Length: 74
Image (cartoon, rainbow, N blue to C red; front, side, top):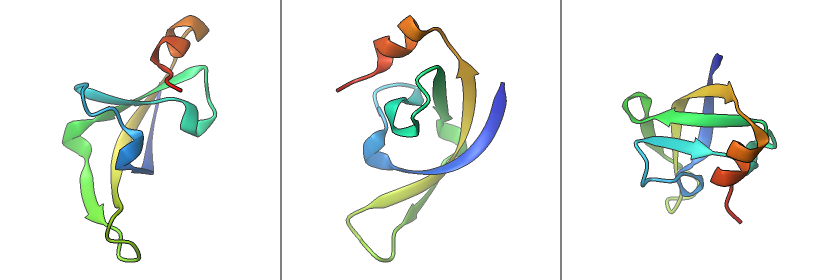
């Protein structure tokens, strides 16, 4: 398991979960990305006030393809 730091659009997150899961955007369908709420650092994009970005801690865990597909959305 690896811990990395990334920058994402808030619109890519599923805010209904305690941990935020991002699938398809990183092109790694064999991994699941868990975003931990306590590590978020929300900032505003100076160039575009309508977009909010954050830097969050991401834990990457390999998962089965079936499990990954379950979380993917069109």
